[in-house]
Image 1: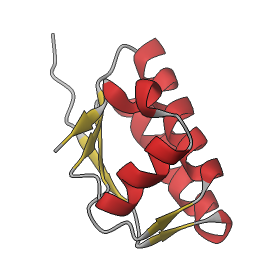
Image 2: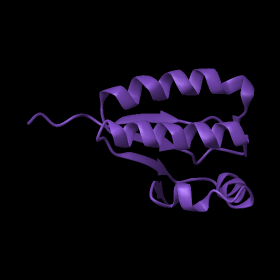
Image 3: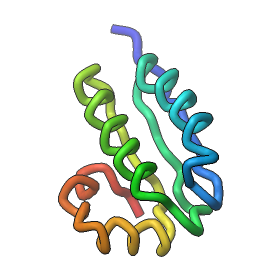
Length: 96
């Protein structure tokens, strides 16, 4: 069995409606090819839609039987997740 290379997607400081299209396109390509790591260390502000998109990407990745991880989520991102009550959805994919 050939091991798939892990793809990495870095989130920008501001993850809002203006940046979602580019991030989504990168995620779609990555989750079709293999395991994905999302670097969220630089995030200063994140929209609800962006968090929902990450949950959707993780689910698609799981359906494709690939790992999906969010590495080093910033304090701003973890605070947004907690405020929106999405902790359970993100708990299995977050790595400090």
